[in-house]
Image (cartoon, rainbow, N blue to C red; front, side, top):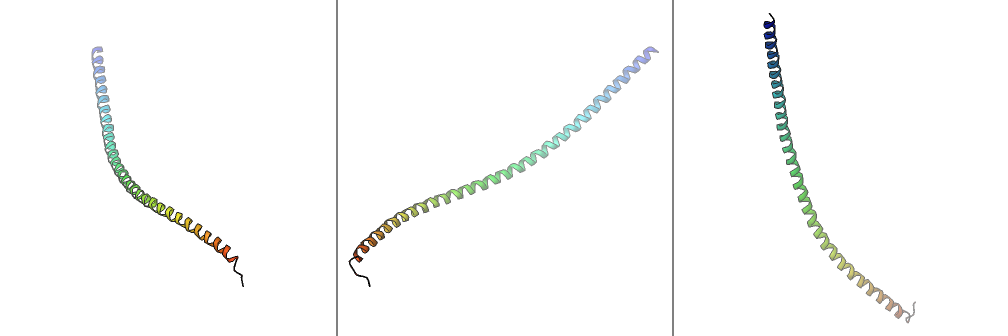
Length: 112
């Protein structure tokens, strides 16, 4: 009877081991499948975000190019303004000279 009980324990131990291996395999398989699905979902979301980032970068590049062209136009306008300002300074100096000369000439003419 002792031999029968030992064999029974071996078979029970073997059955428990097989059940444990099968349960562990199923659980690991399900977790692996869930991880695979999550990685695919993440990959799609990442692709969409990268596409949006790429579009935003392209928009910024266009804006930077527009600002650059406007900056060149502004520099040209500032150069023209500086030239005009120099001319104005010369003309204002000439007007001051004429006023001072006329002021000295009017000194000789009587006022009414």
